Image (cartoon, rainbow, N blue to C red):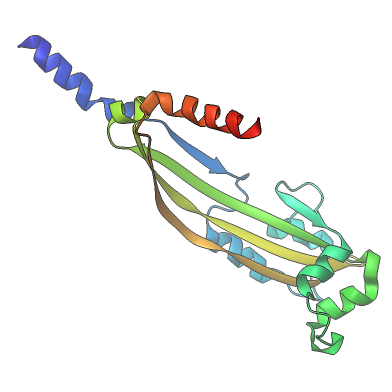
Length: 187
């Protein structure tokens, strides 16, 4: 009887043995709304490049910032040659006129929590894995020339909430089958 109670206790506590994880960029912003509020403080033709750091967008020492060169900015923001320059946003027009002195900075912020759920043994034996992913992500593009912001835009997902399910009928043997198939395709 004691052995059965011990086994039940061990099996019921196994769910806590499932892995969990977090993916986060440096904690400049605690939430999507914080990042959006900061981006809305950036004003075209008024905000200086030196002011960006105080808003949480540091183009020089910030992490997860991508420098975008002039040709790529034009490809992103004026992708159709049939659109007259006069039809573009004033900041994009000025960027096109400035050419190589125009730079863009793409800032990416995110926070994701991953929690595995379900049966410890099915997960451990690689038969069935269920992972709940929650969080948010935020991107903002800031275009500058001569230390002045010309254009800004942002996008993102205020709430990520998804469930990833993976079923492996071969359990722990599944990876061997996948690698054997991959090597057969190569040869």
